[in-house]
Amino acid sequence: MRVLAIGLGGAGSRIVDNLYDHDRRSKVCCMSAVAIDIDPNSLVQLRHLPESARIFFPPIDALNPDDITSIIDIEEVMTRIQGMDTMEIDAILLCCGLGGSIIDIAPPVIEELRKSYLEPIFALAVLPCLDEGKRVSAKAADDLELLREITDAVILFDNETWSQKIRAAAAAAGKEEIGLMGQIRRNPLSGALNPRDHYDMLNERIARQIGLLLRAGEFNEFGIEVAEVVLDAGEVLNTLKGMGFVAVGYAAERLPTGWLDFFYRRRSLKYFIEGSHEKAARIVSLAKKAVYEEVSVPCDLTSADKALVLIAGPSAELSMKGFQTVRKWIDRSIAGLEMRSGDYPVKNTSFVGIIIVLSGLSNVPRVEELREIRTEYRLEREEERLRAEEEATKASSEPEEEDIPYFASPLETAFLEESDMAEPTEGKDEMIELAGIGRGNRKDRDETIDMLPRPEKKEDDGAIILPPKQGGREVDLAGSASVTSSMPAPKNSVFSPKGISIEKTAPKDDAIVYSASVQPVQRPKDGVLAGDKVSLDPGMQRPIDSVLDEPGIRMREVLPEPKDNLPGGGRRFDRGSPRPKEVDPSRGKLRVIDAAEKPPEEKKERGGDDPGDGGITWIL
Ligand SMILES: Nc1nc2c(ncn2[C@@H]2O[C@H](COP(=O)(O)OP(=O)(O)OP(=O)(O)O)[C@@H](O)[C@H]2O)c(=O)[nH]1
Image (cartoon, rainbow, N blue to C red; front, side, top):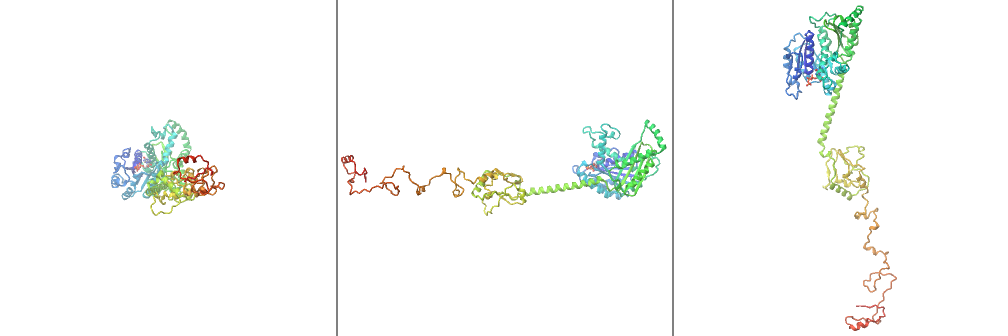
């Protein structure tokens, strides 16, 4: 069939370039092609498309080429397409890589094409590899659904599946570069295929699979023999049109050639004369390979609505027996009833190949996988968005100091300790609770110390207030004086960055418990002496003045007795002590004289006398 192929973006342009090459090399020349891109390098590197078929739209903002529809002028594209020889086309094939950005112009382009052309529009869509990331896979799933809606059918090619095949083949071939592996040029630095070569191999595969299908029913004057079952373009179109997802299986086998083959053929001739079993077996085995191994996208054969079988090669090698066997197998396997088939005899070729088209597929695991990745990706994005929102809300509502661990200054600590001493409370093993930190379940905060609420203060009493937390109440540090444990000890507490929590096991808590006992070196307070538990050390007793008034206290005998004539007789004497005698001047012989008036000789005379009163002399 005659086709107008439009390549969008890097992938689409390279695929169209390869298809064009195959078309020209087959000399069928049934294809018109055009490549549209905003990347000049990609267009320059195309090898086969003529310059006139490369449409370049320079990006307005090279760093932000997001809005592709504003960069690519659809009118310009249509003008260029209509300038080509498109009068006799049977279909339009839009080639593109899913997950890229240029594919975004597919809807307006197809809309314009539908205005100008009545022919069906198919898409050849490349599914991205998994290692390109979830974002690309998610976009690919979106693109796929969009393409399915706006085109008549979407032919799928899975880069992931075919990349794995290529890597496996490269690994199996090792260092030997034979056959297909001869095409693999290794990157000398990494030892792996460079991306360009890797894509070249993928595109070659696409060109073989799709190219042969596009050429079905088209013949050149030289290389085509007469087909036994002719498959024209109409039958290919009917297999594809309105059929949603399409997979194309293609397998080929090289026929033996050369001198050795001459003997082989002579021996084989015997077999050919006796029957065509070998040829038939080859066709059947190629058909199985095409469906199960070499299909453009792995799919469930039994979920296909329609199928098409095409065998190609030298007419002598195309076994009608094998062909009928394959037809029967496919016809019985697919869900639908429409099965078309044909042969495509080619003179000058050493290959036998088979193409099996499965259309209207409802079970394509890779498409399901892309949808699942898209769901995952959306969930992750949603989670990220919610987390970012939550963090933004948290950051805007929480004060900056919240994250900084708080340490009380020595002055503050001293104040708190003193406050605690001044207001001792019942010595319970209370918890300090800083409201607004725990936010709810107390079970989660077993290791915190709860701070009891203080009675409200009407005036500013110098309390130190911590800024309130979200959803909590303000915390009064000075209020720690009312903490039921004897000391709040913030300086010994452990402050975590997310909240303040004081561990029970903090050494200061132990000190708090025992700090109520009076130590010998401490200054006793008035109240302390009235306490029941307080006892004074005997060594520290000090007599008080009133202690001598106690009835039980006696003077020791060794103390000298006071003299009788001592004034101030308020003092009591011991019962055993003799009472002093009273002196009667009238009856005694002694006379009281004034010492000042007595003459000196008289004094001298008296000094030698022994008085009878025991030597007691009254001196006035
Ligand atoms: N088979 C094949 N797939 C390709 C090729 N180039 C890219 N891809 C795939 O197609 C997807 C889209 O790539 P491109 O077509 O280069 O992207 P674009 O639309 O040009 O635009 P950007 O997203 O800007 O690169 C990629 O994620 C690949 O999976 C190619 O040459 N062959």
